[in-house]
Length: 116
Image (cartoon, rainbow, N blue to C red; front, side):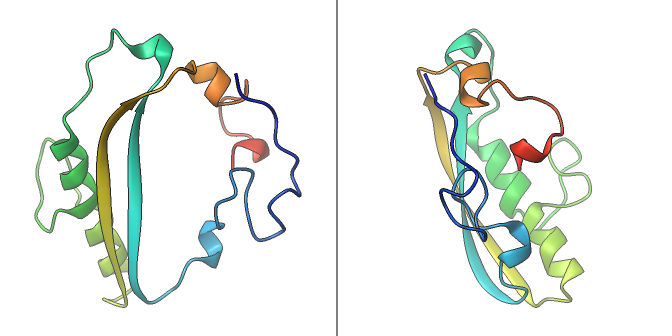
């Protein structure tokens, strides 16, 4: 089971998970992203999309009406930054974890300040 994490454990520039806040990410240049596909213990019976689906969702330079009809995450950031931001995502195949969805979320759900 997961325990709650003190808000100040990682410092003011980090969120509850110890990750840099989005506003602190570079506004120009090349950034690599790590995308972990996680299946919770209470979701084992659910079918999941293949890793290639998420690779296209994050990295594709072309539109796919079934996966990214408005473009990939990479495409979005290139366009919104006038070509100043270049993202590349490495998508790891599905990981089965021993925590339920509720345990991993520390009992939180929805849009709450604690979720960020």
